[in-house]
Each structure stands twice: as structure tokens, then as C-alpha cells.
Length: 385
Ligand code: EPU
Image 1 (spheres, rainbow, N blue to C red):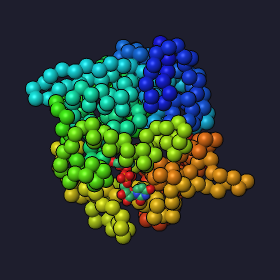
Image 2: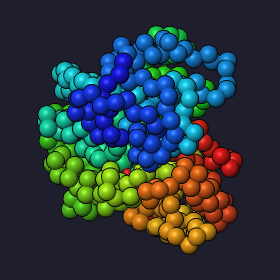
Image 3: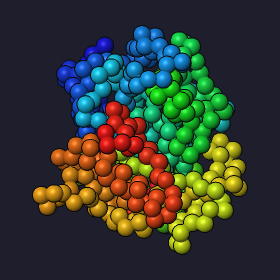
Image 4: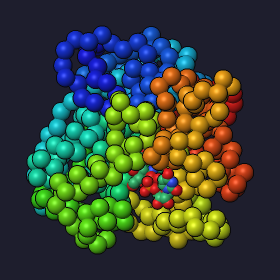
């Protein structure tokens, strides 16, 4: 199983380019060392074969034995790379079927997320428009329950077909079993429990509405951009254009020429704290809801990591001073304080040092510990590694 490989977050164009040798070639941070044992999975069967060849022993809690790579947009990898077997998910294919008033669309895990979103809108299906422009693959979307502009992908997922590396077989998990919450799921929790993925996502089935009217707009910035009131709908293509515009203004659309996008998007999740935790004056407070039922959890509130970072003294563009007085190798994006970025010549250690400094500064100032969102591969925020 070898073959062509698209650049991070972009689509495969066919051809026979060499299998990449480093994580830097496969991640949107453009960081990470060698990958000496990389398999490219082109079909769901390839993925299952990889899973069968590399079962997960639930009692072993050592270093991760295997690594899965999709669009590389949520990985910060160490300079020593990953010595074990790695699998690049490059499976493609989209299928549509009518299901009552809704349409079920099943996409293979390696489909490029934003191309898939565009495909659904082009085919007259609504629901995913607010999730336009997110880097990465379809298979990664349910793992961290990607979300943006008032929508979480969990709301549109019918089921996910996975290969369970513990049971050694494929199974379909309906949305109700996936334990979706803000930037979390059963798939992510299981990976955290074992230190590596238990479930390999094979395909994701979405339930979408037929039509070109968007879901009700729920995010203030998006409503303002579209000039509609919160709760109103708009044309799905107009929502996509507005979201892409907003994301680009925050450096959240990949552009190889713009170092503000050499990142993993938001580096930290927005902290969820107790409802009675007294937030600093002016910090945003958002309700936290169950993405499947919409029910708000009255015990907790979510605040803004970007706001906390800004108000702890780390402005946009902040970077650690260099001994030689040169420009920082890693810095906050000049467009958004929540994105840590590689300015072109950074090492992973530079990103880690910046992340630790931000984490410590926010903790010291506000007593809140920011939790990193990307998968840290062969590196850690805990030590000088
Ligand atoms: N803010 C600042 N400084 C900044 C930027 C933002 O203080 O430089 C404050 C402002 O108060 C602003 C608030 O942060 O109103 C929220 O900012 P924004 O609307 O950009 O959203 P976010 O909470 O920072 C989240 C997601 C993004 C998603 C946007 C839009 C997380 C961790 N991040 O960011 O997702 O695109 O909302 O919905 O939940 C990602 O996960 O990688 C990601 C980009």
C-alpha cells in the first residue's frame, strides 16, 4: 500500500509521488521528524488490514505503538519523528442515499473535509455550511467533534463505521453511542485512555437536509457578516462564503504563503469551568450544551482561551525573544491569539516552549489551566522534551 500523498489538508491529485519521509511534510505545523515505517491506506480494507496487523492490547500502557495521520492539521510532532508503524489515511469516496426527509451521505475517512463540505453544498444538501474551511479529513472530524460558527459536527452525524483494534473487527457506532461533547467523543476518550487510537475511523455517515437554506445562524460574528439576525437562515453558499471570509481573517484557512496558518488552528480548547467560577471581568461566558440534544448543562460555562491569552499579556504576534535578537521562530498568529504558529524555521521545541509559556502565564494570571487541542506526537508540554 503505497502511493501518492497530498500536501497537508489538500486533496490527492493522483500520480505516483514518493511516500513522504517526515512528519513535517504531512502536518500543517510543517514540523516533525522521520517516519520510517509509513503505510498509505487507499481503501477501507487497507485500513482494516492495518488494524488487524496492529491490534491494541488493552493492558499495555507504554508509548503509542502506531500513529494515524489524516490531514495533519491537529498534530504537533517531535523532531525525533515516529519510529513505529504509521498509517496515512488516504481513502476516498462519497455516497448519497435518500432517507425520509433527510439524505444520508457517507464519506470515506480520508476525504478532505472542506472538499466534502463543498460537495454537499454543491449537491443541494444543507447542514455542514458553517463548518466550511476547517483543515483535515472527514475521519478526524468526529474524533474531536470539530465545531465552528455555532455548529458542531456531532449534530449532523448519523453513525461512524470504525475498526476496533481491541475487538479486532469493524463495527458501526450510531451517534448516540459516540459520547459527543465539546471537542470530545468516545473515539478521543478511548485514544486518551490507551495512549493511541482504539477505533480507526473507516467512514462517517451524515444526515443532511435537502435544500439551499442554511441551518439557523447561531454565531454573532457570522450573523453580522451575513447581515441576518441570530436564529435566521441564509443561503448555504452565502454562509460558506461568509465563514471562509471570517476564518481567513483569523488565519484559519490554510495558505502555505502565510505563516499565520502554519498552525493547528486553535492550540488550546476553550476552558469549561464551574458555573460559579468567577471569570475575570470582561471574559466571555458561553453555555455548554449537549450537541445531540441541545440541552444546556447548568453546572458549567465555557470561556474564551483567546481572550484569556490576550488578557494575560500575550498579544497577537507574541513570540519568545531570541538570544541573538532575531525574530521569534514560533509565535502567536498575528491574526488570532489562540493559534500558535511556526514562522518558517521553528523546531518543535520552539512551539513547545511558547505553549508552556502561554499556559503558565494564563494559569498565573487567571488560575485556569489551558488544555492543548492537537495530538502531541513524540513530545509533551509536561517536560522540557
Ligand atoms: N479573542 C481575543 N483575542 C483574539 C481572538 C479572539 O480576545 O486574538 C476573543 C474575543 O473576545 C472573541 C472570542 O475570543 O470574541 C472568541 O473568538 P473566536 O470567535 O475567534 O472563537 P474562538 O473561541 O477563539 C472557536 C473555535 C474555533 C472556531 C471558532 C469559531 C475552539 C478551541 N476554537 O475559537 O475552532 O473556528 O470558535 O466558531 O473551540 C479550532 O478548533 O482549531 C478552531 C479554529
